[in-house]
Image (tube, rainbow, N blue to C red; front, side, top):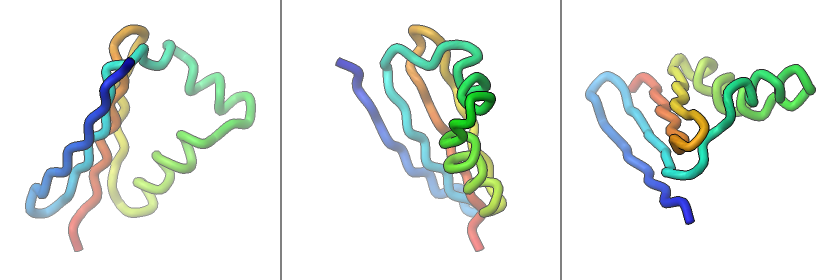
Length: 76
Protein backbone atom coordinates (compact mmCIF):
# COMPACT_ATOMS: atom_id res chain seq x y z
CA UNK A 1 0.00 0.00 0.00
CA UNK A 2 3.03 2.31 -0.09
CA UNK A 3 3.07 5.26 -2.45
CA UNK A 4 6.21 6.23 -4.31
CA UNK A 5 7.44 9.38 -6.01
CA UNK A 6 10.27 10.50 -8.27
CA UNK A 7 11.46 14.11 -8.42
CA UNK A 8 14.04 15.48 -10.88
CA UNK A 9 15.74 18.78 -10.04
CA UNK A 10 18.04 20.72 -12.38
CA UNK A 11 20.23 22.72 -10.01
CA UNK A 12 22.36 24.33 -12.71
CA UNK A 13 25.73 22.75 -11.89
CA UNK A 14 24.19 19.41 -10.89
CA UNK A 15 21.11 17.25 -11.33
CA UNK A 16 19.36 15.53 -8.43
CA UNK A 17 16.88 12.69 -8.63
CA UNK A 18 14.92 11.90 -5.47
CA UNK A 19 13.13 8.57 -5.25
CA UNK A 20 11.03 7.87 -2.21
CA UNK A 21 8.15 5.99 -0.71
CA UNK A 22 6.05 6.04 2.41
CA UNK A 23 6.52 2.33 3.11
CA UNK A 24 7.93 0.50 6.11
CA UNK A 25 11.51 1.73 5.67
CA UNK A 26 14.76 -0.18 6.08
CA UNK A 27 15.61 -1.52 9.53
CA UNK A 28 18.61 0.01 11.28
CA UNK A 29 21.79 -1.93 10.41
CA UNK A 30 20.13 -3.88 7.57
CA UNK A 31 22.34 -2.48 4.80
CA UNK A 32 25.51 -3.05 6.81
CA UNK A 33 24.38 -6.64 7.45
CA UNK A 34 23.80 -7.15 3.73
CA UNK A 35 27.37 -6.05 2.91
CA UNK A 36 28.83 -8.33 5.59
CA UNK A 37 26.81 -11.19 4.06
CA UNK A 38 28.29 -10.50 0.62
CA UNK A 39 25.23 -8.76 -0.84
CA UNK A 40 26.54 -5.44 -2.12
CA UNK A 41 23.73 -4.26 -4.41
CA UNK A 42 23.18 -0.97 -2.62
CA UNK A 43 26.85 -0.37 -1.82
CA UNK A 44 28.10 -1.06 -5.35
CA UNK A 45 25.15 -0.57 -7.64
CA UNK A 46 23.78 2.67 -6.21
CA UNK A 47 26.47 4.31 -4.08
CA UNK A 48 29.38 3.02 -6.17
CA UNK A 49 27.92 4.24 -9.46
CA UNK A 50 27.15 7.68 -8.07
CA UNK A 51 30.71 7.97 -6.73
CA UNK A 52 32.10 6.81 -10.10
CA UNK A 53 30.13 9.61 -11.78
CA UNK A 54 31.51 12.17 -9.32
CA UNK A 55 28.20 12.47 -7.53
CA UNK A 56 26.62 11.25 -4.34
CA UNK A 57 23.87 8.98 -3.05
CA UNK A 58 22.16 9.86 0.22
CA UNK A 59 19.73 7.53 1.93
CA UNK A 60 17.09 8.56 4.44
CA UNK A 61 15.16 5.68 5.99
CA UNK A 62 14.17 4.03 9.19
CA UNK A 63 11.60 1.60 10.53
CA UNK A 64 8.15 2.99 9.79
CA UNK A 65 9.57 6.09 8.07
CA UNK A 66 9.62 5.09 4.40
CA UNK A 67 12.72 5.32 2.25
CA UNK A 68 14.19 8.16 0.20
CA UNK A 69 17.25 8.13 -2.04
CA UNK A 70 18.70 11.44 -3.22
CA UNK A 71 21.04 10.87 -6.18
CA UNK A 72 23.11 13.84 -7.35
CA UNK A 73 25.48 14.05 -10.29
CA UNK A 74 27.40 17.06 -11.59
CA UNK A 75 26.52 18.48 -15.00
CA UNK A 76 29.34 18.40 -17.49
